[in-house]
Amino acid sequence: MTRFWHPVADMQAVSRSGELVIDRGEGCHLWDERGRRYLDATAGLWYANVGYGREEIVAAAAAQMRRLHAYSHYGDVSSRPTTDLAERISAFAPMEDAAVFFTSGGGESVETAVKLVRRYWSLLDQPQRTVIISRERAYHGLAGYGTSIVGSDVFKVGVGPLAGDTVRVPWDSAEALAEAIDHAGPHRVAAFFCEPIVGAGGVLLPPDGYLAAAREACRERGVLFVADEVICGYCRVGDWFASSRFGLDPDLVTFAKGITSGYVPLGGVIVGTAVQEPFWQSGAAGVWRHGYTYSGHATAAAAAHANLDIMEREGLAARARELEHEITEALAPLVEHELVSELRSGLGAVAGVQIDPALLADDPDLTDRVTLTAREHGILTRTLVGGGLQVSPPLVITRAELGELASGLRGALDDVAAAG
Ligand code: PMP
Image (cartoon, rainbow, N blue to C red; front, side):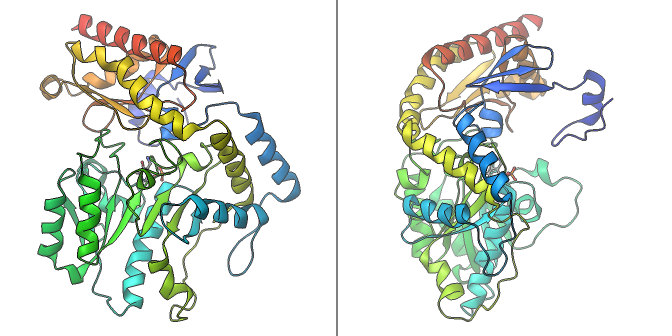
């Protein structure tokens, strides 16, 4: 019986079957406390982009901790790695002259972005622009606003009233988005939040032309476009950001995870000039009373620099573009399996292996059994909302390791199918 209350867990089941205690990692592999070795099919929760055991990140974090582990950044105070990191991110951001607001993770980034767009409109004397539109199936973290705009109702059960003025649209239709804005009245809509690839909601790739059309629908109606790149950012989709790859020129980008590859928690919001303007230039805003104790934490910033150095040196954005083909090639044979209905892949180093919804209708735990059985085959994966298996390995994965991943998943599928 553990005293650790796990996130997103059935604690009765955890108490019954015990914890899987992960002990160490190297490259794309992890070892549990009993010494069993696993291939990490998911890069933790989509974050370990440079893989495990990177001494240079450890050294950068340790050096920063010895010098100054952290100091508050409220008001005019900064730390060198933090100011430099904002500059560095701005230089490769998908919009010109961006500024960066730091947080401790994706959830805080979404909170910050919702408050920021609403306050922006209020400063522009349009306080009635409060509606936030997001996509069905989208995931935006589980803080207050995130829970309110997340696209799956499973995350909203039993918590009572959530934030008002939120609207969901089908995940795959820019026309539906345009109609929803028009229906609400463009003068009422603050922003559209869009994960370029819906991640935790099932790895749903954008239909051809969707992102550009959605971006345009917002632009034409004066609605801010927020790219939630908590998963897509920092090389996973074959460029620094998916927004860069698709030329989206978003107003805001939320990020976390890949900025440090998860070596220490860090997130943030990249803000384009339009939204900066009333806060920075007109003086109308005064103090924006928003921020976190660890906004721009110096040790996290130092780790981020070392992580970005690795990404640049090893060309991990380009590697992700190769992986989009290699992952598809490795996993395509699984579609023949009786439990599998579809492989969603081919854009960036992400894939969803869909367990047949017709089977899931009678047996909702089927994917969970495959996920658990995969451990016996040396693969750590996850069940996505909608019953798919998550594949989003570290970007340093090799072809041989992809083979190991595919055959481990195949073994798990066979075992579960045979058990009936
Ligand atoms: N947005 C997206 C797109 C995410 O994938 C996640 C996390 N999976 C979040 C927000 C929330 O991030 P965190 O769990 O760090 O709060």
